[in-house]
Amino acid sequence: MGNGPIVIGLDVGTTKICAVAGEVGSEGIQVLGMGTSESRGLRKGIVVDIEAAVESIREAVQRLEESSSVQAGAVYVGIAGGHIKSFESYGTAPVKGRDITSEDIQRALEAAKAVYVPLDREVLHVIPKEYIVDGQEGITNPIGMSGVRLEVKVQIVTGSVSAVQNLMKCCERAGLKVIDIVLEPLASSLATLTEQEKQEGVVMVDMGGGTTDIAFYRKGVLSYTSVIAIGGNHVTNDLAIGLRLPLQEAERLKKTYGSALPSSRDEKVEAVLGSGERVSLPVDCLTEIINPRCEELFELIKAELINTGIYEEALYGAVITGGGSLLNGIDKLAEAVLGMPVRLGKPRDVALFTGNLSDPRYSTGIGLLLYGSESESPPIEYTDAFANIFKRMKRWVAGWFRK
Ligand SMILES: Nc1ncnc2c1ncn2[C@@H]1O[C@H](COP(=O)(O)OP(=O)(O)OP(=O)(O)O)[C@@H](O)[C@H]1O
Ligand SMILES: [Mg+2]
Image 1: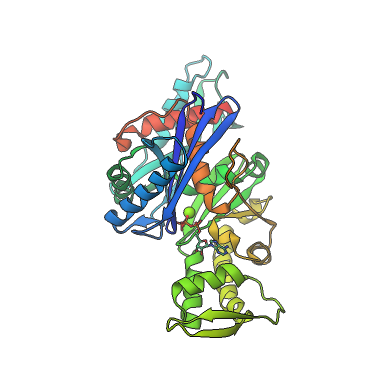
Image 2: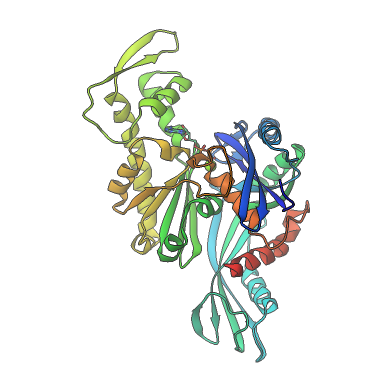
């Protein structure tokens, strides 16, 4: 370990909790270790049992600490779930005929943020999409430009106050400080998408256990995000119900023999019923159950992309990540249903780590690490995250311009 700042990402997923630590150095991030645990106390991305969730977080953090010499103190934690909403806003600031400075940008962003947000919702991110200087559109970095009027178009991401507070409560009870709360699809995108994809239009699909998160990037900026309440666990449930199998056995069969695409295989697989009895099943009967559920998911995604006008703009198609993307044939099925190119996304290389990080289940965790490392300064510790949105915005903006 060197002397660089240590950043810790915490992905509190529905299936697993993943804590990952990295050291920020001049040549990038060195991943120091990772700890995972089975997730308990969460449903569809939100906390439903605080005690159970705290225990799971503690377990993952303890494993991280055992696997590295890192003492976990403050974390970047991911948030997801159906309560997340995002909308476009717009702000403006007079410049008074001198060069535009970062303070002018802050004022324009503050104005964009001054929109009505219901009391039960909290602003999580204010993402600048483009700047307009004296009517000139499409500016990505206005600092140093001359002008008298600065305008900014932003995407505001909000979450339910209670969901945010419960997540923070869990982290704090597990002995962790929360530095920042980061939208999970944003984190997964950081870990899996290329700059070119983000510039030219790409849809990131993170298929988790309880939900599937969607993020759309164009011109390098996150411009749409949503959550579909179907994930890999629904596929497992369908198998368990359809074949009258215990959930664990359905999960095993899905992972070992399951496929999203029909095949002409004439194989049989052995399944163990709840009674302990062993039965032989044609492998195709798994696909007959898995295929319609996956088709349904991608039909829903396609309908959403069409309704929001994104469909035509996603020139680079879609990138699928998350544990659900490990299902055999899911990329081919997605390509057929969506009618666009699809590739599988894994966390891209983050420096020197001996363990296997190149697993789509870790995209969010690695992405949180990347997000934390791109913050302007080493993690600032504070507990009152709600009062500090402006501080967070400043960091975001600084990170934005460094690229
Ligand atoms: N080899 C595999 N084949 C098929 N599915 C798999 C495989 N490995 C994991 N999965 C599925 O991936 C899902 C879990 O994905 P992931 O770990 O990304 O979820 P999560 O982040 O905990 O959940 P969420 O993002 O919904 O909160 C589970 O439904 C699991 O069955
Ligand atoms: Mg996830």
